[in-house]
Image (tube, rainbow, N blue to C red; front, side, top):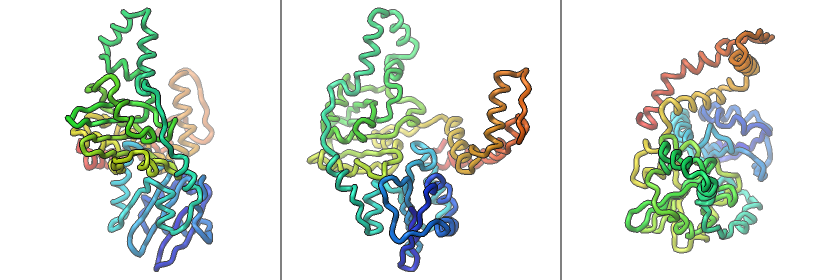
Length: 365
């Protein structure tokens, strides 16, 4: 759903597949984006059905844009790079990514969204087991009860925290509680069962303390897997939360009632804000430079549609088959069986200096 506000008048547009390329069109800047939106199917009112995957309101009068897409750029750690690139393409505009999409667009467009009341009713306090954050870890320890030597060797090689991280593989939610005395208690878990850890209410502060502080929980690249973070400061009774790619009908903004006496606020800087709020540097969780460069290159390849070009896909598949069967003969009708001929390698290699400059600007490597 796209809305272009010009001369005090709103014009509405819709495209069934438009959200798949919304982030790329936004990077074209205001004029190019408006031109693209205005050739979509016009509608009499904003298309705000609950199954939509993207929405944009561009106010050309006030030079303001509100945007949301369920699969914007590469998400997570890549969001800070996308915002930087977006700001460069929209000079003079205020660019706002919706964190509570349905509510924010309902307010901005002055349209009712009936499903919001049901979401409000659905957001209730959840009871969680005492071993919420330790169940998998305890299960791993139990599985080695008859092999203590093997466990001891594993711990000696990887450290206790390294072994525990194996038990927590797949965890995407990061909880940090800063106690009144400044001590940090941290846990990893899953947000999926309840859509957000916030639905556990203040009991999170107790669950976070299970097993005591975990000073070695972080590693370089930790931010890669995190899709939700919750930072609780007991001294100020504040909770800062962040979620990667929020749903159209988001639950988090309705969780305030579950935390009486606390102030809940969105962490606009994501995992970077979370780690720095705890008094630690971004370097403690940041992806290594080579990984950061690779992820950016892959994200840009998607934006440029290189990853979905048939010739490039066939060339990559031919290269994969040749790697496993070097003596084979593989015939590709539309392109030689070498990935370089697709043009993808050359284009991304040409972008390398710009990627490094962007990484330096955003993360200060």
